[in-house]
Image (cartoon, rainbow, N blue to C red; front, side, top):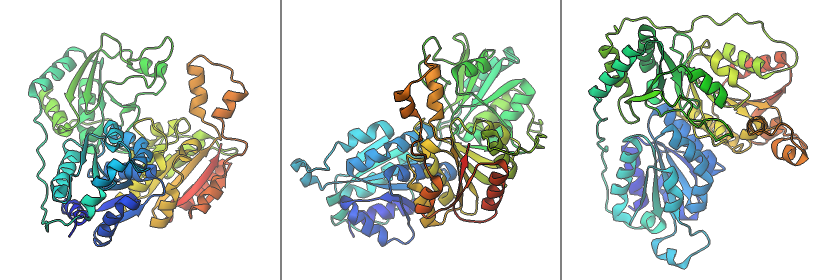
Length: 517
């Protein structure tokens, strides 16, 4: 038995049964060890951003980590953008980064780099394995760190630690510390603020506070005590659809966000942080609430958010039988026809979405209306990229589909964002994943056109246009998808899109619709 075998055994003993991988020479002994462990599902990504993004999607849907396998510092660096998104989503993840044998590092071979320095900004835990005897304790520590509280961890595996002889291990399950106790004084303070400020209190839910059971409690508080319920701009995971309480998402544009929050005197945070503008803009605030708004934390990440909401409900005297306001019937809207539009796509997807589907939304500006409509759709899970780093959508959908076989995954994807990790379509084809990808093909970085206006530039010239538009040549998503092994078709009318969507949702396996808008 070698160190790589021990590492696999510790992962499997703790129910880490999926490894998203893009290995290289330094990881060959770990690859061989994985080959001896049929219980581990190994999923190849053709780019490390696909690997880390898929691990993020998997973790969001299972609440447990997958492993990733990355090749030295450059391989890790290729995956950092989606590690950043995972860190912002607070997703558990165990990155295993191979490195040169310890005695080879002083030679400064071409792939030598500062792996710790690269990993640290995107990881809550980084540890280099010292040798075969250190593998078990290091892996157990990484697993524990990935869940207490959930977050991204990185384990560096030198090649000689992987191939070196190790004593046979019989690892057991790692014992995790319980979640910190609810601060009852804090609960009482929040309750007092709600009572003293009727109608001018907002509550932001995120993380497990955005799951159906916790949303039900938050909705009861909202209805009984006149508290406005919000989600953050970027949503890691929320259970939505008919019968679920539907928080209002805080808008991305600064002016719209400050308008929504203008009359909030007390803002209660449940698992999240105070909302702020994504960027600084001349003459606009960075904080989205008024400076005199009182911001209170009911419970933070890592605490039992459902229990905190339950304690607040009790402190406020709200009965568990208190009714909530939840969407039921779909609004009466005319079925669009003719030239395809963003709104027509959002309406068609919301109407056709099957029960228990998973929606991964990286359509950026193009699908903004879908979120509001999704409150009336069949019950589903909704996810977004959470760190602002684009290229998460296709990998996120890939990981979600592996996490939840039997559930249809719908990826709303912007054409510019999708090109960052288009290789993920190949993984979907290879694994025969049940993902419908809808590409909003407007052939531009539409959000950046808006950002130019936000910073005061109302007219752009040829140089700027060439940096913001995706034409000349136009991307051909049907050919790209087919080249990756995914069946695909194009729609430029509402009727064609709706028919393609119905067909794609009615059968298993990957399918891509290029929606030309």
